[in-house]
Image (cartoon, rainbow, N blue to C red; front, side, top):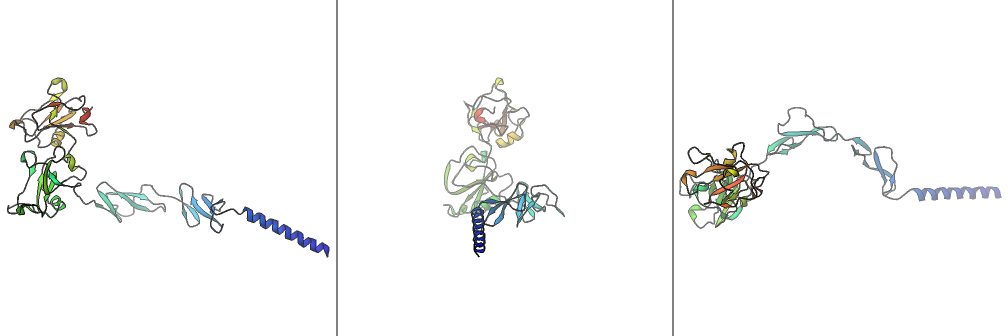
Length: 313
């Protein structure tokens, strides 16, 4: 009888030791543990069960297993692809529309053009009302051919060809005949608009341009580097045989291959034969231009990655 009691006691002791060992070694919530899928990372959950948490690079978690990630591979979809679309396989190896070319946006399974719009507008100022430097006003409501507009966006949408800057006079403008009408500039301007006028709003036609910088290329106005041959001065001359343009941007387009610095005499220049003509420098300069001129001269770098402040070097 004593032997039986001792055997039972021994069994109970062994069971308690084993149970204690299991309890002490089962871990805590969040501890890593070993699972079935060798590509997976396993941890203990709140019930201390070993569960799949994540997968190794190149795999993704799908339920309780890790599958090969097929995403990022360029592909050609079944059927007719959108010509503006960029197609990539997703992680399930399905060819899908991932993105679109510049100027387009993904809309389901197609690429739609991004709606065009103007730049951030500026209220209460304009540049000038000088037709010689780009001012274009279709006129008041009483004028045949005027352009009416209910907002700067409306005037933008109705802009004539060649407009660089759109403008709008609101319904609160003092002159009733000009209320809700549009005006424009057909060339970029120099610097920030300085003429204060209430109930006027202006914006660049190009949404990537800055209305506070004239909606054009960066420039220095009112100074040049000089006219010496040692400076690389190159002047095609006055009208009618010179290089003609109503904007600095136009002079850039017409620049000869050896031009480094591009210049423009605008339509308000004192000498009529030189109004809206281009000039150039065939070499970089040292720093910004400092020679004052009569006015209405503007210079910039032919290479947009250079700065006129550093002489386009």
